[in-house]
Length: 628
Image 1: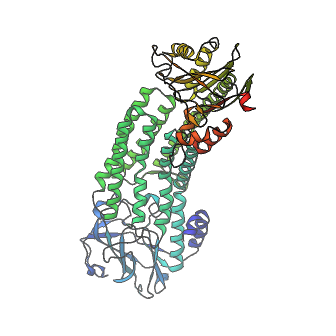
Image 2: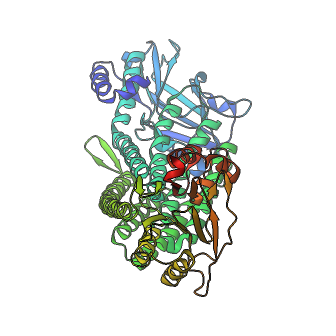
Image 3: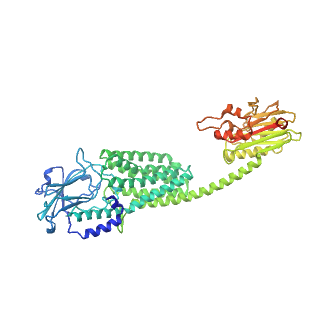
């Protein structure tokens, strides 16, 4: 049956032709109803003239008087050509549990009355009537029905049309009744085709949102929009399977979970708006919490068959309009045109949905007909919202992509400029062998170094690290290197004092560490340090007096230490020491000390393999005679 349902149009045409070729079918239309439960009410000779007249009961939650036990009775004329034939009774969708009697004889049951009334979702059914049971001119049908207080379940998800294509019970030849029920089933599926397509559109929008989020993971609104669209689409198709399955009880945990997910749509709409409008984030997060509580209460009410659905549904219908109004106010204050458009469209869309939900307490008509289709007002509002949101978010995404591309171009240009300022690879100075490796953690970094050959044959070396990362740090590096341009003839201590005055007040609350050394041809090295990692000699850290980092105070003074060396001196930035592996372990000073005897490139490679988190700079200086 489900396969035929999915092939709605084909089945509709075939079944309509088959039904037209069958014998006469009788529709049972004049009914009487009485509350209570008495097995004697199934007797064909019962006097039911005092019972209230009614149309045939429908599976709709707008009829609170139908809750509990009720009996329905009707009489009908039996055409001569149907008398004595094998007949069937065709039933539309009717919830929750019912039993049918013809001439006082039970001919079928939907669901079970024991141990407590329960059953699957309502659907078109066909029940055979024993041959010869209807042999007179007048027949009698009685329906014993129980309906629980919690009636809001998966009516909106039933694609088979049982909630959208009701009809009175019909009696006729078995093949004709089966053909008619299949026709009605297919006709109902065709009517709700726009709802199915709407849910497909929501899933398509969810896929687009996921793609946008994967490209810009910092934009949480894409993530919440994807979740919102998923809960608008996935439960519908899960509900199709649930509502058409013979073995799934309508109040089992599977349908309850589907109903909970569906009811949580307002949670994600609130989170989506909170990502768009931080100004009223607290109100919107409160809205998400209230909506989540409502969703839990609705799901529990369905699972326990409780009778408090109406106040919870009313809150669930009114409350979203409150926090959406706050969101629109906040977006108008922020004056972001795209966000305002999204907020207003969501407000209008949910406004229509909530208005329609409130109307559902008094009238179940929530659609307008277009040919054979029933277009739900709520679906139309949802489609309009998705269209607006996707257009606005796509335009925003494209704008951000353009800005990001421009930023990347600027960063690439800054990196090229930084490389030109620093120099790359090995450089040779008469009497000295120098190797320098610089590997920034981002496009541009905050480490710097400079080697300068002085007129007296000595070599000036300075290495440093600016606090922070990225473009701001790179700009401060450029300022430091610019300050070195005409002051390299100074001694290390006076050069650090000069640079300290140059950068004080320009660090934006940060600081600069630096180590400056002057290598003389006779093996002497004079070193001054401003809060930087001390250089290494023969695998051990040189003991230097540390001064304040540059930019901390204009009154900082620096002292010099003179040593005699014949081997390689290794300068490092803290990115080597602070390299961190997947276990969270730092490379540390001990491991680093063991590495300092290696060439600069090997030290940098080892730090990167361990796990780079900061800029890495390694600079080694050796007297050429010692290398030889």
